[in-house]
Length: 397
Image (cartoon, rainbow, N blue to C red; front, side, top):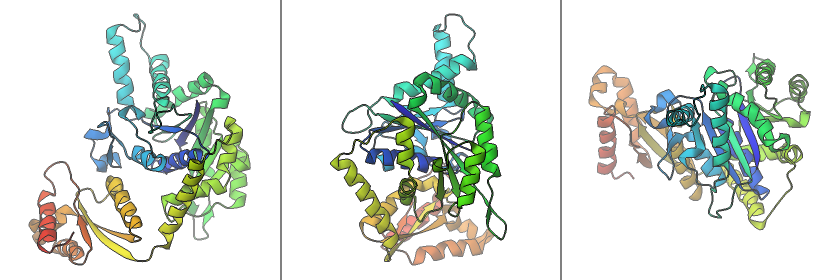
């Protein structure tokens, strides 16, 4: 089993999930069976009880009923696999398991500590879940991609960082690869790209006992050659191992961007991988490339309004958005998605904030379809009912 760890630095929400998914997709095009694990360092057992506005993303529901982070939805969409709740590790799950073992006496009277008991539990969980089949073939995965949530240096991430430090020796150097995703901000009117945040992030990571094999640099614009060389020099990686991941037209272009920069060749060398290409794996790459190209060539639009109660954070509905995008793509249409906060459609808003009320209703007038996802609690319920009533009476899908 080969393990690829994806960590993040500087800020959270930097795109680790998309880069992890893209890496897994590229490995599948080589013919490998790939699985994924997401580590979330919060104390909750799962994401099911958290509001999206606090969590920062949607709650993705798996086939087995597990309520998990949105990144597992990305894994399933990119890799065409079916994951379980055990593929999402949280601090709450780890501590709960260790405390239950302690109560049963499994530790034979020893003092239970973060090291080694918590860190061992994390490693054993990863090893157990990584060999569970995730596709229709029923075959054991050959590569496991582990996304380490949060940011390097966070207090809550410390046990997981330490567990991965130990894990690299547990599985062997040739079976462990670390991709560190960092931010290269563009500063000033001249658009200068700054490497200091990445240097500091990598220094923190190395101080914790992990040294990145690959650095994926997120930026709003393509990475300049001199910036790439500077990161290579100060972060102790080869220039070929510095991947530039700038903002793309869509997330579907990210695997192609990484492939162009030789990510597969770097992984082949680092992990001793040999291509196991099959007609299916070759067809997968062609199919993905065609989909990404089609996405940029669409001109005819379809306008959909999404009426929800968490619209201030669009990631709250990311699976709904992806479903709409995929459906529009299948119909050769370009999706134009507008957002309406459900509360803004309610009558009391007309008195308190008439401009907001009229702007919300104006968006509902000229659309091709209205989508009203569910939500927890009573807030915004009347607005949703009003939108549904409008759609039914005006015969809008």
